[in-house]
Every structure is written in structure tokens, then in C-alpha cells.
Amino acid sequence: MKTTITTGAGFAALLLGGCAGLGDVVAPPQLTQIQNPATIAGSQRVSMPLPAPTMETAAPNSLWRTGARSFFNDQRAAKIGDILTVNIEIQDSAQVNNTTARSRTSNTEAGIQALAGLEGNLVGSGVSLDPAVGFDSTTSSNGTGSVNRQETVNLTVAAVITDRLPNGNLVIGGSQEVRINNELRELLVSGVIRPEDVAADNTIEHTKIAEARISYGGRGDISQVQRDKYGKLLYDQIAPF
Image (cartoon, rainbow, N blue to C red; front, side, top):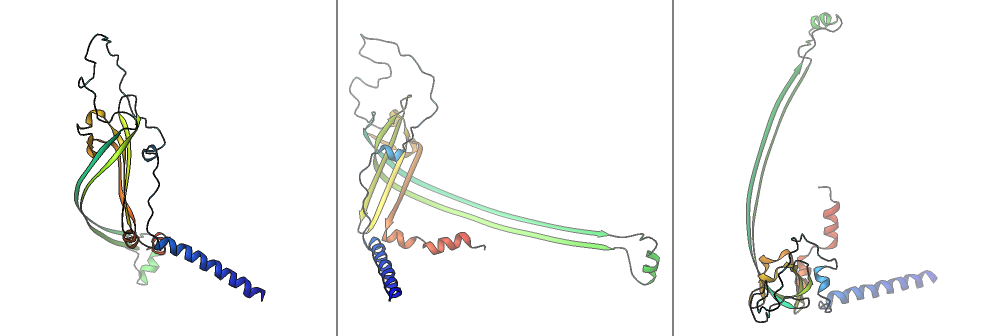
């Protein structure tokens, strides 16, 4: 009786755990909470080579300041917390063809001319000592490989300035999540930009972002179907062939 109760309790716990896991699969993917944009670019402060410091000539009675671009206030993002738009237009293609061929042939022979006087008796009996050892080897290898890849990505995301380096460059980070039905798409971007590269409409191209980190992916029903199961992934890791 005690064994039956223990078995029933274990089965009930397993059933409840399975129902909880099933609920996570059936429920649609949830949007993450709004976070500090500084965590997207990384909690570690960015350190890069800096130019030698320069001294600006003071001109208190002048309307023009050294390095200024206009007399009026610049509305482009330049301070920590300002927002700018990043345009991502990636058109990448690569084509590689490799062919490898290798062939080798070797022939080795070794003979015994004297064997402590016994060679006469051996030769007389019809046994030959020349060559005593012979070895032939032939190997060949042929390999052919090709890569043909083409990618096109057109995306736009707003990023926040999270840090300002001593030389004036800006560290940016931004994220975007869009959920359609049970599929969630996530876009992450971070890097270092120059204030001069920000256009008049407060946008910047991804090609002008140094140390750019761009990630675009998703999770949900479609992504789950395209992803291999844990059993197959484990088998691929331990399979010797």
C-alpha cells in the first residue's frame, strides 16, 4: 500500500511538471521588460585608442567656437541619453570554389647479401634473399568544395547613446521586439560612432558604426519548428562518425 501511494505521488508530480512545461510551449512568447539601454552595449566601459589631447585657443569675444559646425543649436544626438536612428542595409554575397588533388607513390626494396654463412645453404634450397623485404604504397586524395551565399537585410532601429568617450566618440545601444501572432522577432544593435557621421535627419548607416554588433533573430512557433531537438543536438555532439 505504501509503495502504491509513493508511486502515485511521483506520477502526479511528473504529470504536473509536464503540464507546466506544456504551458510554456502552448503560451505565446512574451515580450521582455524595458531595460536600461546601457546593458545592451555591455556593462563594461568601452576603451579604445585615443588621439593626443589638443588645446583650443580661447576666444571669449568671438561668436565662432573652434570645432563648431554652425551658429545654431545642433538637434542631432550627441549626449548620453539622446536617441538616433540606425539604418541597417546589408547586402552580402560570397562565392568560393576550392579543388584539391594529391597523389603519392612509393616503392621500397631491401635485400640481404650475407647471413652468417647460411646464405649458401638457403640459396641452394631454392630460397632467395634478394630482395628480402619489399614494400609498395600508393595514395591519392581528391577534394572539392564550394560556398555560394547571399544575404539581404533591410532594417531600422532606434538606439540610445549610452556613453561618451574622451575623444568625443559615442557608444550606442538599441533593441527592438515585434510580435506577430506567436512569433517574436528581436533586433539588437550596438557599437561606437562619431558625432560627425550622424546625418542631418539624426540617422546613421550601419557601415559607419565601429565594433558593430547586429543581431536579428526570433523565437516562437516558426523558430521552434526550424530548430533541432535536444536529442539530435546531443547525438551530433557524441556521434563518432
